[in-house]
Image (cartoon, rainbow, N blue to C red; front, side, top):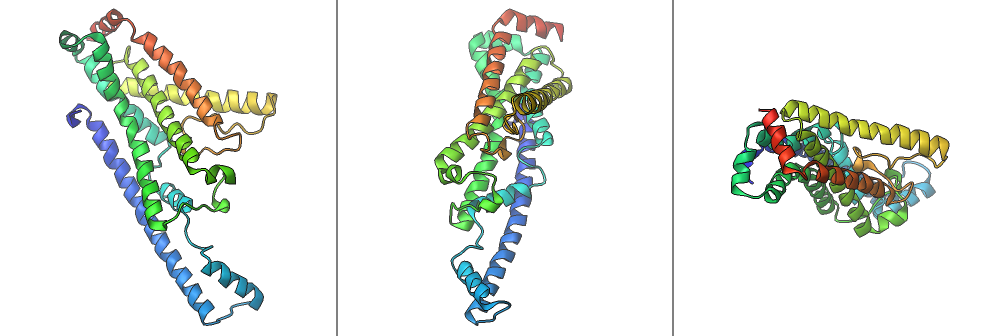
Length: 297
């Protein structure tokens, strides 16, 4: 893909990169302070500088030397994400993803490019091309997630966790392939939901700003329906099944396994399948797309 096809994607990538750099800078400052504090405490332990009860001090020194105060992998990754000015999952990030997904389809449909494309390729090939451009922006968030985890691993040298800093069951965190598999799958599926909704909206709304806002509000509407109607009213108050935290397609990085590890993935997969079916039906007929483009000329 030529970068000029979607300048918003470049801008979004630059913004996320800048946000990541800020998060990393804060993390390195925090890590430096923590490492210096650990060194100071170890020196006190070696010099037998007792600050309080000798028995408690001895236990403290044993824990420090055993690495109990060292920054863990999950603590590091959480700190980096938590200190990014533009979080990986937020309503602002969502709006930027939606705008990036809308840009190319709107440009093609609004500028009467459809007929030019269809003279050079069949309709199925055209759909694959436009879906590729539409879905390309969704790779930004998973890439940033991978970078965060790589840096966390390099700087800590471990894949450890601290129960006090995580809302996860020990069994889940201990199975890292499963944990990362579910987390990245959820990120990709939720992002595909965003892309599908933008494509559905863009068929009839070729104005970039209008399509972006309608798509954004549609996703927010689905999120509110899941959180309030399904999660709060049906799941909690009628079925009395506890807090339905997995009914969330926006904050997909911050989910937990309180209701089962696969529950958020199942909910997202069902919504994705529904949007995929609607998308297929929306673009099944070539003539209806051509008519929509001609109406908007």
